[in-house]
View (cartoon, rainbow, N blue to C red):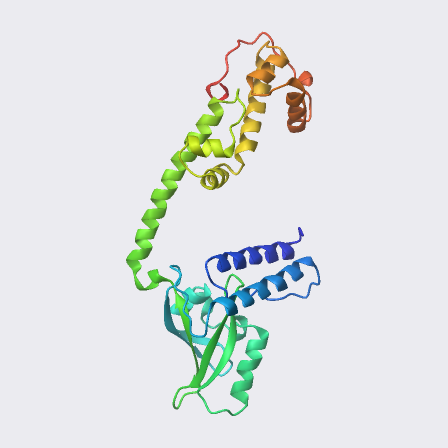
Length: 308
């Protein structure tokens, strides 16, 4: 599970689940040559997406989810070797690549092998163009998007025209939407940062007390549990309880080193309901017991502000 390949597969599965949560059931994860549990999950995930797509969306349905509520005609211009020479701007939104990344890129690198074989077959079969074929595109995030494409040629030219209808973001049509959304996100981040800062200060000010439950904390700060938990992890890269526990252990170690207080009193002052629990937690974190910490009993019993 820890190999780079498996980590990439797990990230791709997360992306796939995120797309499904947004209402996009067209994406598929390409199968690998590995025959393991992850590959089984990939197959099952693709099957669920396909079943959901067929069960919910009828032919011709356009997803009205706010992230993708418009469709547009998208076109590639390919040379005789099927290398991308030009394209309409919507392609970058559709596939996630930049213009520079797409220019001179082989078509085979953005569609599946089976799709490329179908594409070549249409062109080599002598079928009168334009002709329609279903192709599976691979986005930069390695998600699959199946779409019906029209293959044609320009008059008196050798270039191949590949046309398809794709969903695009609303803000592609309304540049102001991006700016407004950006302003909204900045305001949200500032509000979230202030909220988490208040929680941070609260925890440090109450290290001598048991940590309230997440439900009680969310009620205290007028928000929901999910926002409090995820926000704290985002800003401090730690869970609320882990931060609380480490903070009181650090405070306890400082008190052992710089005061003459009995160890049992120090454990109580740092929110532990009994000394054995304190000793066990302390040794797990510092690899030594409280008794083994060198004490400077001549120090003045004053704690720094962030340990009070």
